[in-house]
Length: 71
Image (cartoon, rainbow, N blue to C red):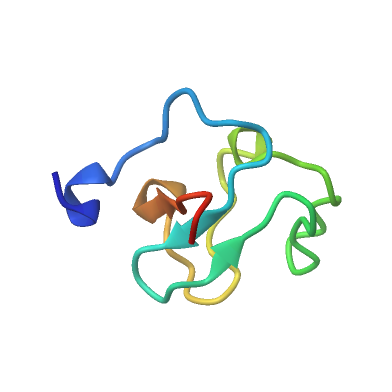
């Protein structure tokens, strides 16, 4: 399965998982949070508000892919 076939709301996501936007490649890092949306550091991707979007390109959460730990 290619990365592009994995779009959709991620399931069983670790709290420290970094997520990458499939549109603009912005990385959401839970350790950093999101200062644009005033998301506190330590907030896992799964705990983001439903209306949260990519702060760079406005893509919806379903367009994000989980980054491998080795990446």
